[in-house]
Amino acid sequence: MITFYDIPSTIPGQAWSPNTWKARYALNFKGIPYQTAWVEYPDIEATCKKIGALPTSKRADGSPLYTFPVIHDPSTGTSIAESSLIAEYLDKTYPDAPALFPPGTKGLQSAFLAAHRTALGALWQLIMPVTATILNPPSQVYFKATKFGPHLVDLILSGKEKEEQFSKLKEGFDILDELLRKEEGPFVMGENATFTDLAMAGYVLWMKKVWGEDSAEWTEVKGWHMGRWSELLTNLEKYETIL
Amino acid sequence: MITFYDIPSTIPGQAWSPNTWKARYALNFKGIPYQTAWVEYPDIEATCKKIGALPTSKRADGSPLYTFPVIHDPSTGTSIAESSLIAEYLDKTYPDAPALFPPGTKGLQSAFLAAHRTALGALWQLIMPVTATILNPPSQVYFKATKFGPHLVDLILSGKEKEEQFSKLKEGFDILDELLRKEEGPFVMGENATFTDLAMAGYVLWMKKVWGEDSAEWTEVKGWHMGRWSELLTNLEKYETIL
Image (cartoon, rainbow over all chains, first blue to last red):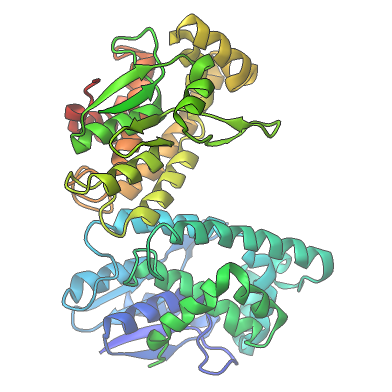
């Protein structure tokens, strides 16, 4: 059975990371059984090295940076890091399950995901400091010291600064909403979800879980674009299982 | 028969504009007969108003800006401006011809085209001053005075500045090359061309035609990414007809 590596937290169900949610959604979407291994931030690198998962980028000093999500599939002896690469691996290895990348759409979805990253640039300053507070102590220490540095993690925005950042975030979602309205149906390709939808949902779920369902922040986001973003979660709720 | 509105020039075949090429490619790709009406820049607005084509954006002073490409289709009594909208109209009105937007890909292709615009940001400073020189006198005057202003049109770059801008342009094409390598085959969706490929080709054709086949600039671009960009033109050569 596949082992899926995720980062725990103090929230119900533990899973919070937008990037690991993309891969967890992908596994659930394809209906592939897996078990979760919960690993705190300081142990991610050693875990990846042990199972042979590659680093996904470099630190400022040039040293390799290991990140989750990672899966290890004993049926092929493969370890894969990074959610898009995991999704491509799952499509290739389990072709009978529904496709995350329908034929011919890998480059196009990749372009959409790049647009998505850019569009949500304003989110980090808003949500990273709150995210730090829901981690377990060992991850919290690591996250504050090394992950994004004090400029992102130490200051929970308020007042005018927070309003401005929310207004930028709304502009980002405006761009995504416009792209989504190009086809009929709730998903980017219309009636059926693809990896792009799961990736967007990973970010929305992060907001809902870290800010909390009853927060002013989530209430604000829920109100945008005729409720599109909370509806996205509802449409994908059946893939929210944590195995 | 559809009338296709384009901007003339002094180069062989006249057609040079990347944006009108996108729509001309689209008509040829779908095999729809049309006739070209050649209109100089100063007459674009009056032409659009006469046939009921909408403006596509606003000038800095807030007044509406009318641009080509525009088509007028007498079979439906419709006039459409802007290459993506023209492509969507052609798919809808002529569904038996090959699809520019295969089912479900309008939002995804739109995201790719946005990435394409951003990736080629460095092109304008390099090519606009040269483009001005190939226009007919009435368009040339209008182009220099109003289109992009003296900062883009008056200075043909050379030396270090030109080298730096070319190196930025190369980085933009690196991004596109990486997205294209996600699928097997010459086009973004693999074996079959879509509107995104025609749009990319429109820009490459602009470079080839305005700089000229034997220029140092075109030779440079041809050498990038294993000849991918000149091959793109070769693969779409059968849709370069000027009717």
